[in-house]
Image 1 (tube, one colour):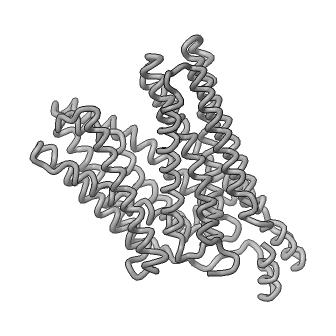
Image 2 (cartoon, helix red, strand yellow; image 1 turned 180 degrees about the vertical axis):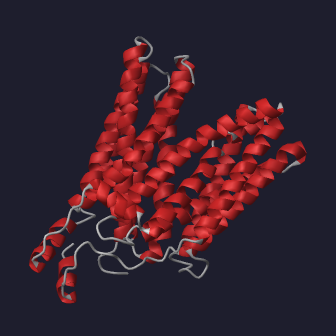
Length: 455
């Protein structure tokens, strides 16, 4: 491992940022969703639209990433993003509490709050992944991605459990109080976790450039985005992420209704089924993290192999669910859903690991724009997939008059999308390519190493 690279403790520290991020997000997308629909008896489309807004705001990820590229440091953007996310979470709780007495201004406040949540997630998440990619050795990137994402899921789980206990008996004031505490703790944890990890990268680079006597070129955002889009691997990877996440997101909101309408599962049973799927996702993530990095050292398949394999396995599992509707209760639904989770988890970690491997390939100082482009493709496709999945199931039920045919048609379409994604992934080489710099700077190797050792 290079002397400048993060060890496991450093990876764990950055993972705490994802844990904190997940802690705030789960309250805004789950707890407040339920409060609006159940306690306040508001239309379900209201929280649905607010969550969709949170995803839509992440279209600005490339612009946020460009800001960190120009500044040369990721830490301020991570801290600033978490501060924005925390403020958005508290405002969202306040707006939700206010909806019980004055709906119109409360909804307007909620719109502003969820916009802040989306911006905060985009700013912190994009820069965090770039920092991980730049500071983690290649043979540890898949494991680092696994650790960080499991820690984010841990943030979901721990916050849901603790906040759920603190919210009983429920009052609007208690919702604001609990959310404020979670937001404050999450921001403090993030601040301490990221502080000092990056080092004085910008200062060191500035000294090196000054020694070379050349001023760094800082392009406009449009110029930087155009340059990244013109890179074949960056463009292909963005399309792969969009197609695969469209398939991934489309299954998210229809699996529970499918289990209830076709297999007669109760709400409790369908919730347990989701737990089985998420257990499979975790197992798939862990398997790929181990296979590709520290233990496997690439001998158990490359990131590209696991990306293709995860997409193919996901397609196969979804074709199985499409068939399950026609077979009925005799079909082993729980094992099928578990295998779908394993395949999804394997694909997800391989894709994230590929992001980290490819973000430094291409033109210099475009890592934030590149990661932002892929993050925006992921967020937009996931939100759009969830919406289109429900619309497609409703439309198919209307056209065919059968829930079995409707859900099977949607699962079949999702499987087809994963097959397309597998073909796209097969064309992407996740081995980092040589960089293309904006300016040619002639720096001796010893001078460069001396500068980098100051980090």
